[in-house]
Image (cartoon, rainbow, N blue to C red):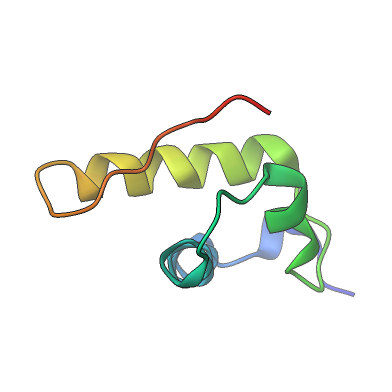
Length: 68
């Protein structure tokens, strides 16, 4: 079984981006974590989401945190 330290964060980013863009509703970090076969820490997901937020800045979409 692959450990989180071996995850390709670029691939994780691509998967999260696809899920977020395809979802008609907000997606919780816990739900995003369940997408992956390999266990992934919530902090890792949050870090990748922050990278996406920065990359999307100035584009036609925004990544924002909503209350849960």
